[in-house]
Length: 398
Image 1 (cartoon, rainbow, N blue to C red):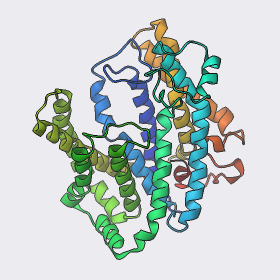
Image 2 (image 1 turned 180 degrees about the horizontal axis):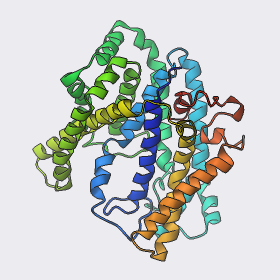
Image 3 (image 1 turned 45 degrees about the vertical axis):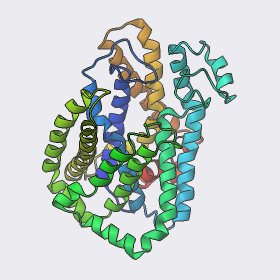
Image 4 (image 1 turned 180 degrees about the vertical axis):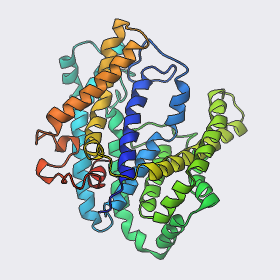
């Protein structure tokens, strides 16, 4: 199994930013979320938009690369069964034990659920519909909220494993070689074309739902970058190209956002078709150039065995499962106290980090029964400290 410190570190950093992003969702004005603070800022819309367009695509791309580096193609059936255990068990456990408190807090905040968590759970696990708008997923009676990523990743992994025999065909081999040989302008333009096409053809008709069954725009985008990651993983020359062009790609990403951001922020409901199409094209270009820049800088500066990396690589998936419920509960609890626009989010951030750290360190990684529920290997199967940054754990959990 090939070790890639840069992708391990980048994945940890990406999930750290995800925690900050979800924290900010409670405080950004005019963006809906599960619970909202009374302290909201329109200025937050700019950094949120900056991250929003590529943050999840980056995680799916890393996940695709992890599968390739883990040797999933060697035994696709066995790999698919392993990933099913490693992804579905945490997903089902999270939906049953971690996520319900988010639905409760959202429902009570909306005035559509009566206070009383025990009574709520009895109704929740009857799988009956709730009043419209009570919480995300109320119509189905149950929700997975932020764990949608795990469900999507499981499906994409199974599709990839099932399609691997097609990868031996002459056409598939030509595509893989062509992707690995991308350089310069071709690297910038060709992979961006499908992403722009999805935005023009699918995005106007399929809003993001995160419900798996009717989310065709997001499926097209995320599965495509997932495949890009799989193809990119072992293309060493392409990684060197990414590192070499990182400054150029960063400049292009920032320049594109400087045009795209103001345009999309000021689009009206009655915008002309050409304005909408231009905004979608810029969004696709920004997505791809941002990914190129992030990957290039990761290759240049993160490909080293950091001392913190082994622990963080193990901790990242439990933290991901836990973090949003902690954020929602803390905002729900602190918002009525009117602590101020700086103290409240600071306390939510500190409480979330401490909660994730303590639960992971004192319970999850030490209690054998809890480890598989949070996507970790049994204690006896942990990799030795001498091999900390392999992609083994990462591909197991993301």
